[in-house]
Image 1 (cartoon, rainbow, N blue to C red):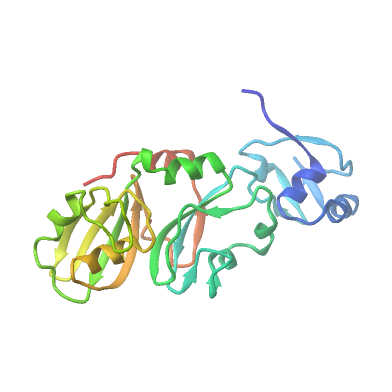
Image 2 (image 1 turned 90 degrees about the vertical axis):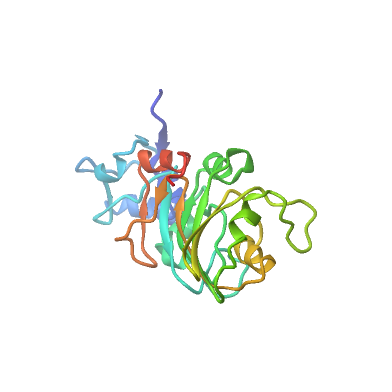
Length: 247
């Protein structure tokens, strides 16, 4: 496969370091290095390879990861996933410069403000659509805490594939419920309807008091990734998203 190349000033502008004029100023000031060499030619073509951040420095710091970039974020309570919603946005948890990247970073699906846990963020459009497409049946597992004890028939109700949510005309695809205690359970769904998990339990006569997503496909939220923290996904972790979810 041919290595993609990028013009230096366009590369830096697309990574959010500033406008083309601003990044040309950085380059002219000798603040950009590649393999220890100070770069001054704004039109120089550079290989966009995975090791580029380790070979290139801007103002003394490693270059931000180039596209395609996929992040794993531990979404904390009270954070929203859209620029259009009121409240603190998940994008405020990322470096300010990353908000100006092109292509833009977008969350892969959403978690509402009252839901915590594993969230993927990417600028890879095909990957995003592959994950959220119902055809690919990527499972999302939630740890659910309930207001009242489980009745005992919820697992059969959710697995039947006949449950209809209020205001909808298409039944839910089968979902898998594993009780953990009288008031806690793991629920795995392969769809992403609006407030789906909360509405499923409401249809079963219960109320969700806490909701946490801990797994997408075969990818688990690491125990050492604190709320609000994020890190880049490697190739194996991206592939794990499409693996069959462990029992």
